[in-house]
Amino acid sequence: MSVKVVLKQDIQTLGREGDIVYVKDGYARNYLLRFNKAVLGTPQAVKEAKKIQEQRQKKQQEEIKKAKALVKDLSGVVLEIKAKQKKGKLFGSVKDTDIAKLLKEKGYQVTKDQIEISEPIKEIGSYQIKINPIKDVATNIKLEVKDEEK
Image (tube, rainbow, N blue to C red; front, top):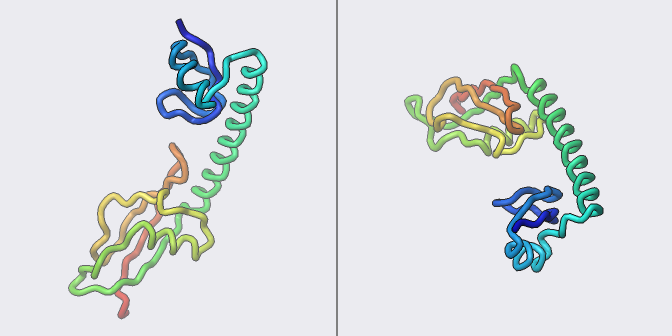
């Protein structure tokens, strides 16, 4: 037999906070309800869950709007980083944290988790870096790695 419950917090195998799910009676009684991770799916709880889902959806729409604005601002941006090198090979490599720092200096709010580098940057040259603020919204920027001594 299954029971309708409303999740009070995110549970990886079931869903997110505010989701209405059906689970087996024993799982609901012995785990979800006992450890205050869910409430029974009463009409009042379902109403509250729908409000939570609407709020989450509005927040997600705002995040998408901000991400699209950021992507629009970033399109065409060219970053330049200077690094020590010998015969075209860098001492070390350029990492996503370095790129995030450069973007922050230019006024863009991008974290290192939003930066995707396809291959390690260990040589002088030009590279395409993918900036992915949220899922399905991305852009590429150009990164120029130059010699520090020039």
